[in-house]
Image 1 (cartoon, helix red, strand yellow):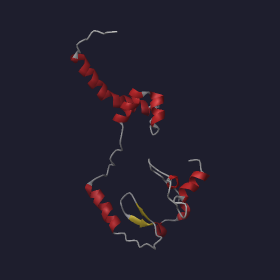
Image 2 (tube, one colour; image 1 turned 90 degrees about the vertical axis):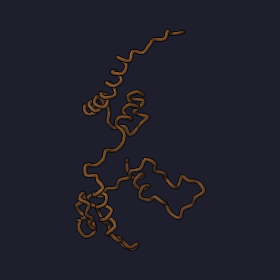
Image 3 (spheres, rainbow, N blue to C red; image 1 turned 90 degrees about the horizontal axis):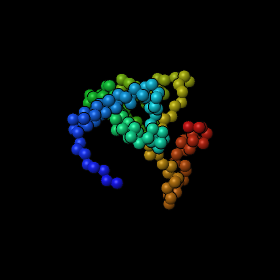
Image 4 (cartoon, rainbow, N blue to C red; image 1 turned 180 degrees about the horizontal axis):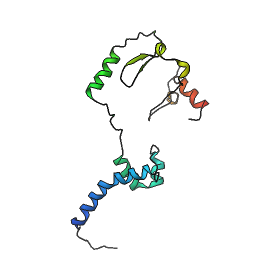
Length: 156
């Protein structure tokens, strides 16, 4: 079926597109803050199946990336580098160090009472791979014993 060609009315089309571009991020943030739509989009398959292609695509375009920390500057990075360079650990040392929010290094073994602190392990990797899945490589021991123990004994 042939449809007759129509001339595009730029006086209406361009303002509508610009309005959509400027208002979509605000509408999306409002809907997320009021729990109309979920703000947890780590599962892209679920996101696209739940909210559809147009919304999901535009949401990922408008709200992608990690925002820069408030105190991010060249001086802060240099301070962190200088602090880390001042720590010299030999291979036999079992001391553990922690960097605080003001970028000072403290020795965990000396300054922190371990009985009052929880044991927290964070694994943040989007491309984690179990080395045992790689064929033709043999290991003398499990290369990721802690991760395997956590995955076998805990729900998440």
